[in-house]
Length: 201
Image 1 (tube, rainbow, N blue to C red):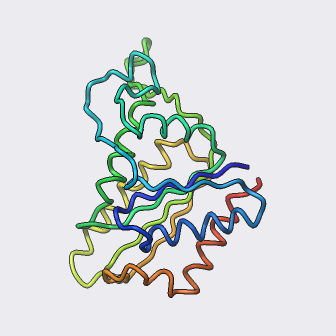
Image 2: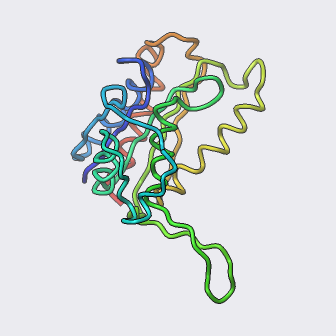
């Protein structure tokens, strides 16, 4: 079994990366072949809205490092995606990745009923683990409604990937301390367990 972990934190060796690495370690202990990609190390762009991907569905036309990564993602059995929470939302790197998944989708209409249809070229049925690290506690001391919006928005990720199994691992109360996950034995064990669950049926 092949599992890819994609870290969308711009900070090196911080909480998001620590938890992704723990999840991948748990999967590796169960015999999975794992790979870690740090988006901060790649040259990536946001979606241009050019619709060039509709000429060959699933093929983004941008000549950056994200285009081949999107293709490579299709070959893995499970995916671990991680993002920190910045200003009540995902990181810019994570948003660019999710926006570029649009290259796999085509909107249309049923010729009989006129109802809108969605066609996806991304192979569904994969397992997905989403890792989210945020500074605020749970419940949040202020503006908690914005986190509710974030939780709703995150549901687009398993939809876009056609995931058959989806789990979200949250870290709360990191408080800008980049090593807080590394010092939380219980949280690290949860990450390893979540990674191990990706292996097998």
